[in-house]
Amino acid sequence: MTVNNLEAASPPPAALDEATRVKLAASQTTPSDTLSALAQDPSVTVRAAVALNVAASGAADQILADDDDERVRVLLTRKVLALLPNLSSADQARLRDQTVGVLSMLVQDAAIRVRVLIAEVLAELPDVPHALILTLARDAAIPVSEPVLRLSPLLSDADLLALLQGPPNAAAATAIAYRANLPEAVSDAIAASADTDAIRTLLANPSAAIRESTLDALIARAIEQPGWHAPLVHRPSLPDHAARALSEIVAAHLLEALANRPDLGAETVAELKSRLAVRLAQTPPADPAEDASDAGMMEMARRLEALGALGEPALLEAGGQGEARRMAAMLAVAAGVPLAMVDRAAAMRSAKALVSLVWKAGYSMRVATAVQALLGHLPPGAILHAAPDAGFPLGTDEMAWQIEFLASHNR
Image 1: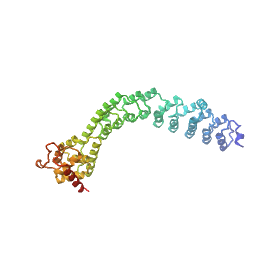
Image 2: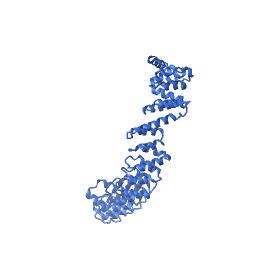
Image 3: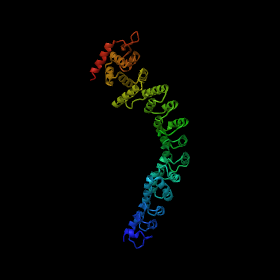
Image 4: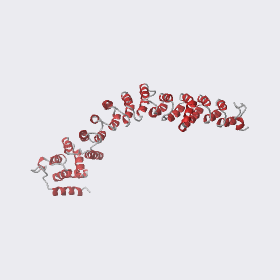
């Protein structure tokens, strides 16, 4: 007996073999009442074929939405969801009439796999029932609620605030904090919570609107939350007073990023660079006995130079603290010579060579005096002092020769 001849039978005779029933269940020309009967077939293979049949009626799909076999419900879910993005406006109206009931059953399914499938598809759709979205958003399972909380355009500000007040799971606030164009009221609610991960996510969300007063409160709390420092420093908009407050608590590399922000006032930038210079100058190397510490000091000096902070005060401060290695690195970078050249001049205890390096670096004799004493270990009587006009006691030709001499022994 052919499938076409059997399609007239409703319900199908119990005597039909399973293979024939599967063909009936899969055929889009099988009558609706027959498909509804097949949706209750004892064979899971037959019921699965109905679940895959796009011509199955809403009544058949509702029967399958309550099927005992999770595999059948998964197949049904995939079929219904696959139809959603490709339906015309007229089809959408028919979909609401025929399948909202099916989806409403499936979003309550005991199997997380079924609910996750629905959440992943409905999360970004703008024209599905609001009640379905709320059900998914309130799901206790993070894989179900997370994409909806993070992406759904159907969740209103009131919905989000209610979900924050009574979160369905531990990740709900963080998921909401990821949302694009988060409004100030929702940001306030997240910021007022004790959820440090959600707050870090909020701060890292460039499109989240955060009130200035809220930002100030978070900066005050950030003293004990190092994980907030980087996103705070990199907020798209940062008032000058907030940048100054952050400069007191963040690490040097983040202070450097603050000092390089183009949206801060010139006075604030100068203040931040000054603080960075002091911070870098006061940071001791991890192990002065290792070559790696020299590389670290040279890097520190280069960063000061890039910030325009490698001036005489920085060098004199290092000298005043007895930081000979730090002073040597600063002098090398400022003069544009290898650190080994400074070391050679110091090892030679040559006042002329050290003064010449200071001259090349563009510093004054005030620095040269400190360099001779600290790096060259020269006694007061051997130190070259400034000329009567406070200039260098050596001619430029002689100082240029000293530099060339040091360079020739450094090749």
